[in-house]
Image (tube, rainbow, N blue to C red; front, side, top):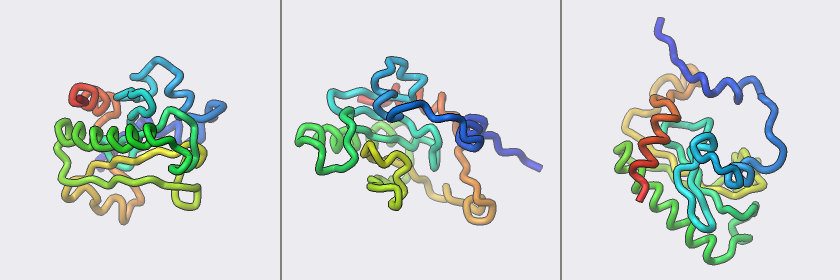
Length: 159
């Protein structure tokens, strides 16, 4: 029998207590980028790895200002959010060589937003064959690289 290891997911599975306040606001205020998985900071947006990724390299592009709707963002915030999304795709291409991407925004809990109070963009790298039988039959996602390694690769490839 082969074993799949994803030890960082235990906090998610066991429902470890959430920190008070907004996860994204707290992460940006905390200056420990490695702990918070922040790979890049801009003036009005930042990029961080998803702690519970769909697949390795799953990035979140987040406005610094707490806003729940895209229309709530000011033009400079929208511009940096979109430009940082482009930079994230480029960094992932250099660091991980994916075959494609899913890029999207979930607005509202019913649409899949895990943190509906703070809008963010998902940038998910995809590879041919990355969605195998495990997701279909075993209801299990395979993340093939530890978050620390992915973090280091993306930091090195961000321009």
